[in-house]
View 1 (cartoon, rainbow, N blue to C red):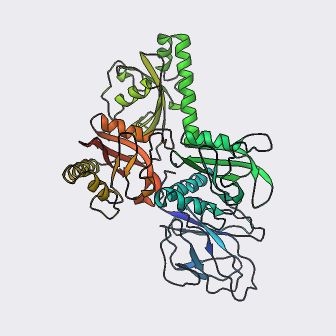
View 2: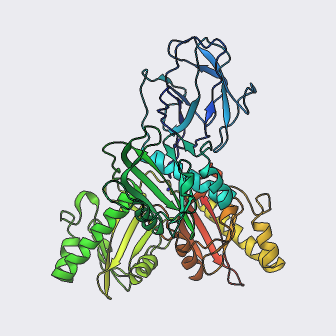
Length: 531
């Protein structure tokens, strides 16, 4: 799940070296291999990697300053040898970078788009330097592969992943796919794996990596570290894989090679783990020392459970706040009906999750470090039948400011969809809602439909997920978002958050606010929008 957006993009033109040591792509929108045609003279020096930044996701006609070369006009065109005007960069599409002059020998290149670069900068990397892929690049690469699966369907996606020359095979960065029985569905460098059960596949230490990935995928997504053969170097190297469930039947993964690979503390997988660990420690402390002693320490803003503003909160199962170290005025108040600034339930949701054994949920809340509202993920768990504890992490880089006007439009949109379904019937309504050109489909706010069991019945821009059950799907930070949607609708309707590929944002995984209601026929009808 990459949820970050950027006002500008950094374009890395990465040269394929003679040893084929490619630094493959994976950041915000990778378009696949870009072939730079050989210069007819072919006598000049090889071109070093170039960093080229623009203010948007386009590479217009302009000048790229190449080492030991004169300035060369460059365009992105729609096909081999074409020299047409600037073309928008789109995921999964092959383009040709045309360098019509300059006297330098050019080689095939790959294109990576990264956020955060200053608009208009043109930078040149040192000769022979390499740009390492990050954990975020890897997550984005896998997310892009999931998007392909959701848009094109399973069969088309598997064909692409299995293709050694396909858009998702980029040197030592590639996709592999398995079902939950451990049977391989796609591997570009090992086509002989197809149809074989590989659960017993192990690295030199005996670690069964496919079995471990399968278990991670069952939980939604996450990382696995092991050693594996690098197809570029032919050597067994340390590898960090990111695994993501596509649906109830299969999962995909990709990995990066390198020494000392580790996850950042802001990684969703690390955030999930840290919250579960912190809450488990608080539960154990409360059970050993008793409710009174535990609450006294949980409410101490200088205590061990409130370090760096990362605090434990506690509540009774009737909704009464028991511990809130940085907002003591809340203690003793019943906040069962508490909602955040966007109308998303806080009180009811945490009580429900604690009563079900624990879980993650999202809301906007005041960050004690900044005294400003920020998006937050929290994990809660019951101590006993009477009370529960929780801990959260603020995610200030996740935009969660939804205007009252946007929320009103969402309510109106769902109301119109419910009326349409009641008037025209289920079948006609689903046909209309699944039409990306239909009256209810706009990329920034479209209608989706679930049955009460969590099966997608309508999703106009992700047709590959229609018909699949998503009840056990988890998003990057651990929430069972489809279950949250169903629970919200069945509680009378309302707002909830979720992370999903956003067609209005180049299908990047983004936070969305949903409004959902239950139709007269029992189907759950909703819409969502990004901040």
